[in-house]
Amino acid sequence: MSAVALQLLQSLLVVLAAPLVLGWVNICRAWLQNRSAPSVLLPYYTLAKLFHKDAVIANTTSPLFRVTPYVLFGCMWLAAGIVPVLATDLPFAPAADIIALVGAFATARVFGALAAMDTGTSFGGLGARREMMIGFLAEPAMLMTLFTAAFISGSTQLTTIVETLAHREFAIYPSLAFAAVAFLMALLAENARIPVDNPATHLELTMVHEAMILEYSARHLALIEWAVATKLTVYMAIGFALFLPWGIAPAADWGALPLALGVFAAKAALAGAGLAFLETVLAKMRIFMVAEFLSTAFLLGVLGMLIHFLMRG
Amino acid sequence: MNTAGPLSSQLVNLLAALLLLLAFSMLAQRRVLSLIRLFSWQGAALAASTLIVAYFTGQAQLYFSAALTLVLKVILIPWLLHRLIDRLDVRWDVETLINIPTTMLVGIGLCIFAFALATPISEMASTVTRSTLGIALASVLLSFLMMIVRRKAVPQVIGFLAMENGLFFAATSATYGMPLVVELGIALDVLVGTFIFGIFFFHIREQFDSLDIRHMENLRED
Image (cartoon, chains in turn red, yellow):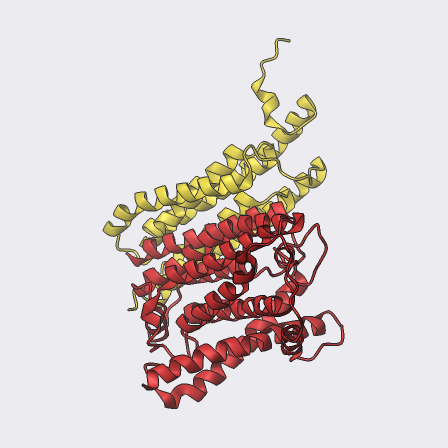
């Protein structure tokens, strides 16, 4: 019973805290760029504002357009329930391993792209095509990274990976270092962050993700924005689970929960600041350079895996 | 769970991975200046790994070869190359025969080949560094690939020098280094080779007004 409660708590916590993480990244960026920072709660106000508006939907759209925000939000919420954020012993975790998790993200991406093309505007089509190009390059890199961690721990279940990696003897794993860099690059691409896409721009030549959601308004837009924030938080949580697994509470231990919560908050704060720093020092690259960027990520992921096999002997 | 072995081999493994990463970044690099900087970083990683092997195995001669690597490949040859490209005025972007993502994919293929080749050999070895033999082989092959895909003479020479780095690393990881006399001889050869290449560069440019070695494939009848 307590495990189910824990599962519910974690799913709610990740989804509810996601706008806060996004707000934190935004104020860190503002500080680094010498601007006066908005409130850390700004994403919540935006969501509340959007939920109170009336939705406008184009006549030419099919039901797919209306369903997509709910699908996106549902996929991200599902992912938030699978990834071990607070504890490893989640009743929901055996439902899906890392490959299924990548599949959930891919489902969200396909629906997003279809809905963007559904309105028939040129921006929607442009954004959808670019998004699919980035997605098909980022996904193999992501999978290779996850496979490296899976080979080290001998399982594709995230909970098992966390338990193995957190309780091993200390050792330097060059393969994990490679995988971490590859993961970071894939994270930037999948979450439409700066070297690949600029989340703050509406300039038609460069926007990718924003072009896809241009036709959405009110509650639909709110759900999509919320799903985007949740996706970023879930990706951070996957990164912590693979590369910084210390502090996540072991099986159904309620006593360790406050510590796990604090550790997660600290890690998320650090990761958010790091992300803001990266976004400040990097420049957005040309869309055709993305192929090179992501093939480097893929290369690092493959090298990590190969080096793991080479050095095991 | 600890399959990584003692600290010494962990450190050597880490440096070996760094060496491989540097070989790949040289393969992907477009500018001659950055190429030279990466080459000196590779030399530094090589010197550090030799030093670690020397410390943990107590082989005095390896200290000499680490020092030799440091002086020659981190300081002297990069300085020579810098002078060379200053005098030749070749800071332009490097042209490659095939585009860079394809080159990297070919590089991954070479890596897999090298690792597969090295695994049965390293199983028979007993040195602390045996698992890095595959990486040494892979960096030799990657440097070879770099010499093949680059069109200009300077990057080809840097590829040649990087290949020597890989060979040196292979020697350290397979047998704890070659005898000092051999190493000194090789070091001297590499240095002299760099000088000679430098002279060749000037001659090539004088003859063809370019460092593009495609011009050398045409037969001239005069």
